[in-house]
Length: 280
Image (cartoon, rainbow, N blue to C red; front, side):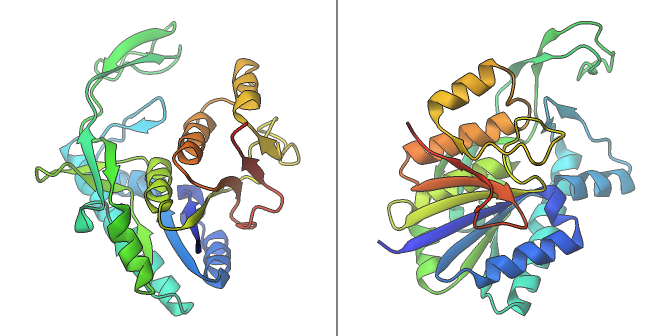
């Protein structure tokens, strides 16, 4: 089976010219089949502020009302996606920019009301009140999508034509609505959808060298995580916050047939010094 690499690049890397150029140079040098998935949340927040649109985050997730949906569509599907395509073309990569709505490659449904626990000091999403203690609230995330399926056959068809898909974190519900969807999830389901066609490696690239045992010490990389060690790392509070959904997506991808998952720095997209995720 031919190999294919899915590289997901985080928003912080996308918005730093030097680190982005380094990653795209490395990406262009990867031989064979490949897909790039990108975020762009910081650019969306900056654009929203310029337009006078308030950004609301709950548990690290962006609440996406009608106005914010317009912003993320412009930024993710337009500005960021096409800049990446143009830069890759300049490096000799025949890239094609896509959202999940294009060719209906990623179908989602609108996230229902969800109960979340907010920490003390966070703002209540409806009243704006600063909470004095942890509180359970029901949150309407707006036009946020949870993925139902990915059409790996259509993506594989593009790859088979010698094209390199560049995936923006937008999906559709089949009823005419775009949905803002987590980029780590897009990377995971893209890798899973292609796993029946290729031997897939999924690599999450961000500004840190891997999963860290101490967030303030870049030298504290945990080089190998299995499901059992992940459970212990969570129980001990060593791994928490935004790393949890990334690791959850990693294990879902492995169970769905993806060959290997790596979490690493944008300077090391082969993951030689990063974190390798495996099933026990």
